[in-house]
Length: 109
Figure 1 (spheres, rainbow, N blue to C red):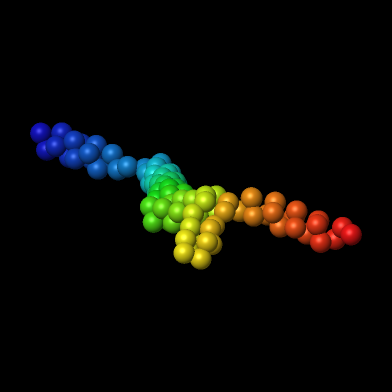
Figure 2 (figure 1 turned 180 degrees about the vertical axis):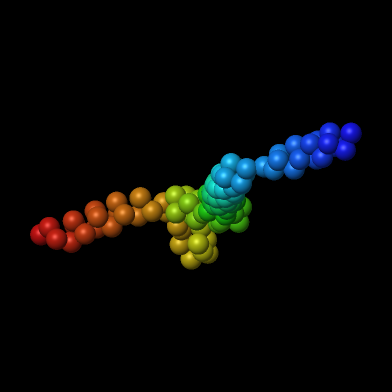
């Protein structure tokens, strides 16, 4: 009986894992983990840049849109500057046409 027990212990001690395959699996796992982390970092940076562009750059603030609409209305509409003095604002295109006509009239004899 003691021989069977010694033989059984010897069999168990011989089953040590081989170091090369274990090392190879560890290195491959480490490389794959690093590549995955790098890809996730790139994805995060791109998403952050896209959100920043969408929220900050692409969207005009409401105040800016209102001011631009008001300026366009002033440039393209008729209104009184001083009704008592008879001063009116005219659309910019009409004012340019009147200046061109006036300039033509001054250059011709």
